[in-house]
Length: 222
Ligand SMILES: [Fe+2]
Ligand SMILES: [Fe+2]
Image 1 (cartoon, rainbow, N blue to C red):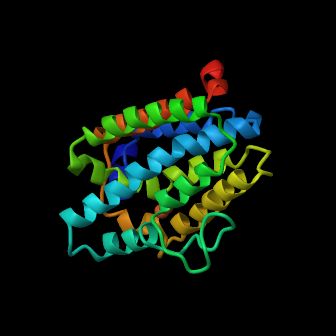
Image 2: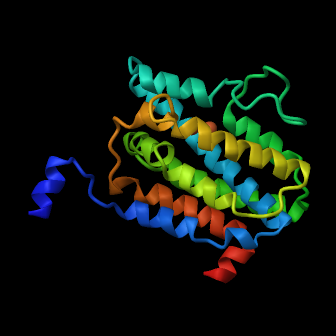
């Protein structure tokens, strides 16, 4: 009986990738030091690269899809995070992964930190780029229609943001919660017509591995 009602209400089945999002949100974000948070930003930068690539792949595959083009306009060559001190001039347009690259460039990270982040990022990108582009496209609403918003709200539970790179990262996260979540014009609404399923699970697992391996405190917590 319940199943019939769910079908009538068009309730989506629970997917395993949603469990991965839950696990990522449950990481001990509030215990992170400033250095830990800079490592998170350095890891996230590589996710951001992967995400911008996926938006471009989607627009190339569906060039007449106005919603996806609008999504790209909100993620690539955009001034919607500008201005920000040390990162973006007033009205300056850039991809969101470029905003993160400039943010991490300001971070107080050692050469050893940066080498490790680079290696983890390269491994993450190799995994993501090996996924069928059609599956990468399907992952967009899993990020934009609530997944990243939940993750960003969890990251924002961290307490220490009072240095320039972290304040810029916080600006990025807070900005994205509002960019993604408007029910009609938000980024979630612009890609909700794509229906993700668990073929995207490897992408979320790779993202989780990237974050956990970047922050020793997470590896210890696991
Ligand atoms: Fe973005
Ligand atoms: Fe977005």
